[in-house]
Length: 219
Image 1 (tube, rainbow, N blue to C red):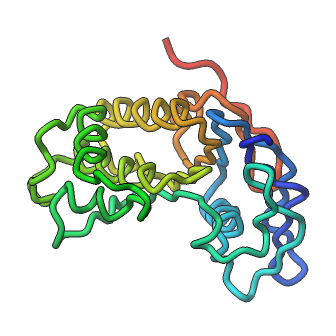
Image 2 (tube, rainbow, N blue to C red):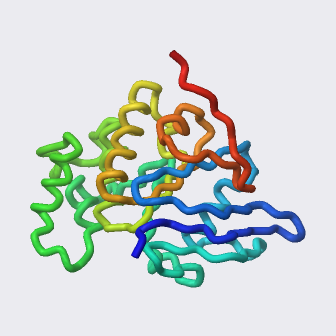
């Protein structure tokens, strides 16, 4: 059984106007990048995948994840992780509490799993820290860890690097992609940044399925 994310003739319309038209497979560890100007349908495509499409939109086609048709499943049952621009850490919980919150109920030694995750992210000893004391890069790493510790089968990234400065952006971007590859997660990235798309290394499309030429990286 493949662990791919398959958008099988996924089409979203608003009235008679097509907004999203994708027919693509994203393999485990691969990143599909969606690019386009504001209002071009990027966030609408993610909403269709996660199951939060607003009523004015109409959707057709199928969404498959790890060999299962998830098209009609509610959001919580789709097993898809989502990261936004804002890290959305719970301010009333410690760093460790934020991570433990995401763990499935079947995990018994939760503190041990949290400590291993923090060590992997270069944040050993941070479990008791207040999220408000973290730097932007540290918060971004904790937010990703919380997402992947929930054991999703795919990862959607909605401009998650846009508020980071250039140097930190490259560092966190590499961390996110490395974590996704290590866990074999198919990834869909929404971004306005060409360097994000280049770093992702996969196909770059508009929400209407057209290939976007991004050119070589600057030397």
